[in-house]
Amino acid sequence: MTAPHAGTAGATRACPHCRETILESAAVCPACSHKLRYGGPSGELGTPAALTPLRVEGSFRNPADNGAWEYSMVLTIRNERGEEIARRLVGVGAMQPGEQRSFSLSVEMNPGGKRGTRH
Image (cartoon, rainbow, N blue to C red; front, side, top):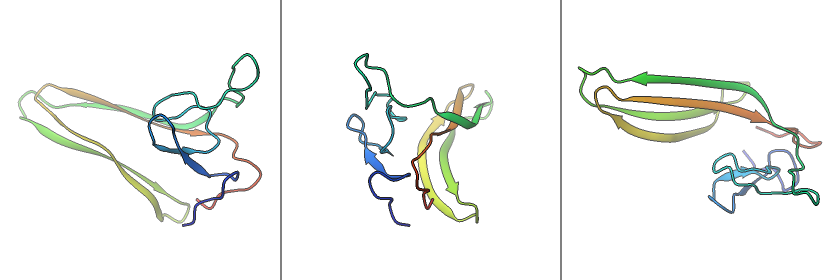
């Protein structure tokens, strides 16, 4: 997999605030929510609102009589052929009896320019 060139859809850069890899076109970092780009004299963002075609939320509770449990949150992205193109360990932790964790996953989409991406 080759990285798209600067200025094309799918090109990435590092957020200057949190150093996460983000889309070059991002006006707000999706990881740390810092504003990255401003437009016009009023300081408003110059990009349209993102579409969110997927949002999944859920939670689970460790039953009070089960002892401590550990968890790992893994995110996998696959292309249309089912080939894995990214896999990330998002977080790990432990839950004591009676504790609860909530998770949220969302996919935001924005117009990416004139050229498509190979992803």
